[in-house]
Image (cartoon, rainbow, N blue to C red; front, side):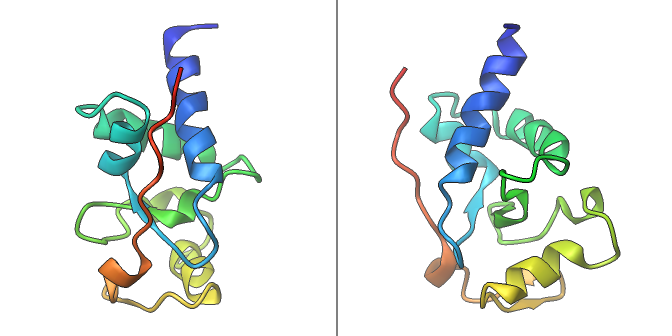
Length: 110
């Protein structure tokens, strides 16, 4: 398995555990997998996750709660609609009450 494949799988493992009605950030996932400076790579992994049914990529936003990955979902507002269906209010592409909905994953052990 290539190094990126392993990295992406760790990202997906954390993402699969984001609870319904919660969001987390690219940087938070990077820290959880022991790659604190790799938030951008987590973003690349999320780009690929749009086609993976078991990875709730719509629950990953930037550190300010902005839906920066929304253009990777089919449909104009699919990411927002998925979050709203989980009870998360989104206004101007930004999660409202971000702190209330934020989920911090545990650190993954190798």
